[in-house]
Image 1 (spheres, rainbow, N blue to C red):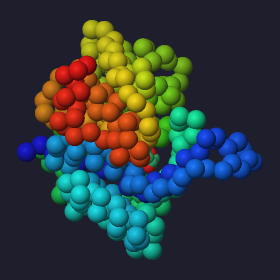
Image 2: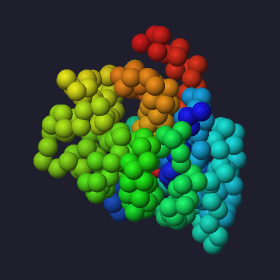
Image 3: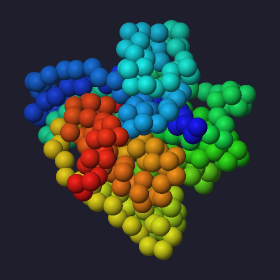
Length: 294
Ligand code: RIB
């Protein structure tokens, strides 16, 4: 059976809500503080598992209570944690999130996520022709490069969500099967080109997410646009991760790209209706019901 292998970050999100986002040098009084599981890799794994896929998480946590809580959370959501490594003398990654003025600002401290490395033999054991690999950019870029080259050679599909924004070696862009930047990441990656020009260059591979405006990709003939759904926004954190997890779920079920994007857009739109990166992630049934109404 096909399975999704998420190679990526695992973090605890430390979330403060506030009416006002502080400026540099300013102190403001906030309303609430909560810790919730996060990290782009972990979020994508939970999103895909909630939607019904077999999911294996591959990453690193510290030897601390955050790490233990996160493993518990994976287990509750049915994510396979056999390849989540505990790094001695290291702390679990954290993301420091301010939710204010209807948007978030995030500072990520990678900590144990910096330790995600593999030997060639480890990749041989981890991946096979049944794997569909999901990657993001909160782990070392050398690892992303190694995994994408390995998968290209073995014919294993890879979906890379190039977030947070950083320069990418051109061979990584060429080697992946799908690339899913948001519009800002797309501009950073392909400086000097318009989004439409880049879409044309990478048909059926590049999908640009544009928040409330939906998603665009090129189908080989023309640029396709899948609009976002109307949502009662509580927290947009993790919406992109839900999109990527859901897209992978639909693609391993052999759906065509447009159907997969529609499914993922609905899942992602629903995810903003709950608090925390994972709090609003829908089940398969939730998405199917919503799709019938769209
Ligand atoms: O994409 C959302 C995630 O980004 C948060 O959960 C946080 O961990 C940051 O890494």
